[in-house]
Image (cartoon, rainbow, N blue to C red):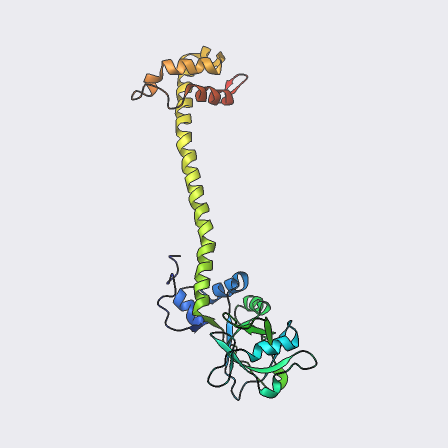
Amino acid sequence: MDFLKIQNTDALLRDHYQLSEAAKIIGCDIKDILWFAFNKGIELCMEFHDDDLEVSCSLKSETENSLLIGQLASLPRDKKGYYILSESCSLRINDEDMKCNDDGFIKCYMKGLFSVDDEYKDILIKHEGLPDEWPSYFTPSGECTLNSKIILYVNYDERENYYLLDTLWITKKEISCFLDAVREQNQPKKNIKNYKAQSEAQKQKHAIPRVEVLMAVVALYHRDMKLRRESPAAITEHLFLHAGEFWPEKGEPPLSFDTIVSLLRSCIKKEGLTF
């Protein structure tokens, strides 16, 4: 995580940031956030203002119509009468529209930040953040206060030459989720790297005594050619007799008797050592 500029969101003052801003603050590329958004479920949002430039939306849910309408009607409302879906988004539903049409949709108007769908996240990745289409649907961002899961379809065709302001936003909470996801992904890699480094060090540590023993045996071979015809156990006994010459400080080989016998047995063929 040291490669990122921030480790947490404690210093962030706003509730949400444009994706380009967030990338600079975090110290990563926008494409990194897009990848984590799609693969790790990080929310990316677009903002709606419910002004003269907006169009209506169609709300859909798998919940039974009367139950859904009851849940919507019981939602808390702000001072302007918007139904509060979460800490970052709300809906305006006119009294005459508080009903489902023949297709099961409720006409409404979105205000605040709404999360784009996963298919659109995939498109964002493929087009490197510059897609040539708009999201198929939206869902409430943050923790929705509605018991039922809802999907919101923007009625793009309601107004001629309508243009969706498709700037991407990410909330402070989701930035924290992004940092956690990066931390989680990099932790196993770090452990594997350390394990491999430790494994190589252990191999090297164990290899040195074996090399010393074999070099000593080769030296003894050159002194007495008859030693080549002896068994691994006999060669090991001979090595221990001359250990003081090769290991003057300890006076004995760095490996045990049985270990040296096994080592020599693995190296000896029919005609002697494989040197």
